Image 1 (cartoon, rainbow, N blue to C red):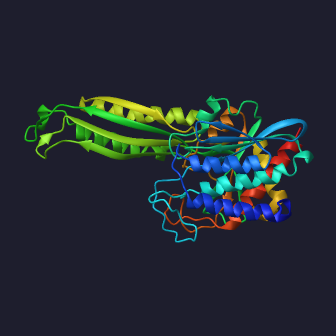
Image 2 (tube, rainbow, N blue to C red):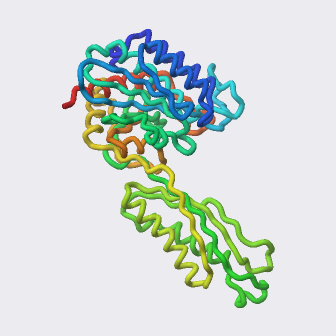
Image 3 (tube, helix red, strand yellow):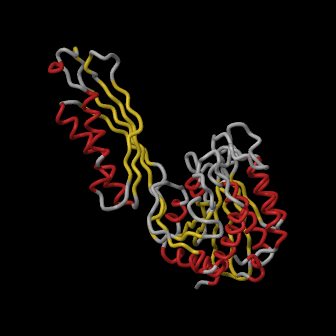
Length: 381
């Protein structure tokens, strides 16, 4: 790891900031204390700041002459999880924890901002630092874009800590990376009858069960990786009556816009076919969530080159399979272009676990990677 890129005092300050942020987590759209801290650190480094959406902070660093505008993004929010790590800087807030590594994301971006501000005369272009609220909830990315916070940005880069990668490693992925997600709620209307005379009714429960079984098989016939699951079902009131209605809810995870539309249609078809057979009627409501991440090739090549330059090829992993988890960073890539990369956390526990705690090396890796990416991007034509 090329620590020489970052002054030791900045890495030390970044470590302290990470501990402070981890100890004082805040849920989505409530990140007031975190936003104030971010604002203060940026301003102390001579970086212009703007507030959006109450708790979003945008830092703008004007470097040398001309050049492009590159953005780096971190998410601020924590999760409603009770921490069980036992670390010396554990959350002081009951039932709230940085269980997804956003403390590392925020602190590392502050570290990168402090480091880049010291070298601004050597760079040509503008660096925008995006500190975004509510990634875990309804998403702050699209709302920031709608507010005009990213106007004029040419490319956006960001990272996520990854427990499956060793500390000191960086994961790069070309193309489809994170899944889009769409939630669906289905209501099936049948006709009640006595359980002794099922032929006089239309069984909404059985119809729903057949639709769910068909939905569960969808992923088996698809070429592109996907996941379609039903997690809730409600039907019937007593054991000896044919249910006249049934409701179930699930989620579709898909990769790419075409596959997303295709899978939504397949879910609707499964429900329609089951109802046609039984004579039931149905209503289905689809709610779009995040659109997933499809990294652009040129920017991913920049990230790969930056990682190899900073850490050596042996510490850079090209991720072979896309993930079925989702992330609203894809909104930024759709808005302009960009790349999302992974930072090795080397942790035995998964994201969102009450035991998840990335080490300090992951924090240093993220700081160095961000700085290296900005320098590499601003060198491009």
